[in-house]
Amino acid sequence: MAETTARERVFDIHHLEKKFGENTVLRDINFTADKGEVVCIIGASGSGKSTLLRCINLLTEPTSGEILYHGRNIQDGSVPLSKYRAKVGMVFQQFNLFNNMTVLQNCVIGQMKVLKKNRADAEKSAKDFLERVGMLQYQEAKPKQLSGGQKQRVAIARALAMEPEVLLFDEPTSALDPEMVGEVLRVMRGLATTGLTMLVVTHEMAFARDVSHRVCFMENGVIAEDDTPEVIFTNPKNERTRAFLSRVLGN
Image (tube, rainbow, N blue to C red; front, side, top):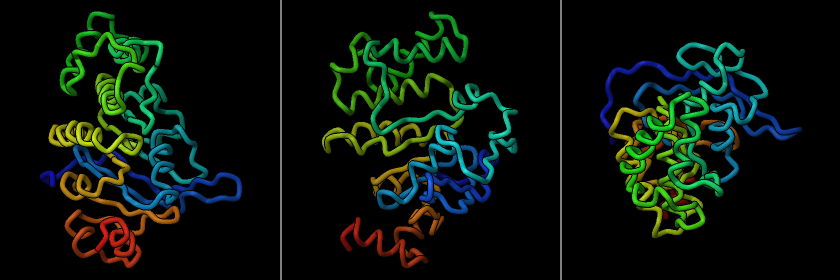
């Protein structure tokens, strides 16, 4: 598990709720994340994990509650959305790369449009991050020429090139073939040692156990348990957490 030190608060989420029509997907979520913290969010499909991440990034508008980013309410318009999303990046399950652009262009365009970098600086940064994730040699390839694991590594490089403070990972390995999962998890394990704040929705229990500072177990739209990996995986206090891990881990 990553080392724990005194940290600055990045997110304070109070009484967050999300409804889709009559269906309540998130119920009274209270959640914090500190600078440099790696928080894994686990739970069965449909428990609200991805909706929580999408609300944090305002890709989905919360029904009620508040999301404070460094003490500022991101829903009141005081923080420009494009600047906020540059600081709070997201890596999606389905990669979301631009298929008509090369790998390098995918990693350059956001820097130029949002960060207002010139092309030379944007390309230098993009190449640095592509090299970090082991994809620099594919800079001229189009996404259709890449495997799923390679696409996801490019997506991570693209997010990092935006100089984020926080990266949200929405089940980044669940669309991958099993043999490709390891290459993406290796990149994420490396990122977890850099001081980047990471909120990770994942089904990869070994990653959650070994890499995170905290693990949140969600069920039926609530955070049923939020504790250290040691507690969650060896002595969970909540019966629902125990039942879920018993099903997933087979013991």
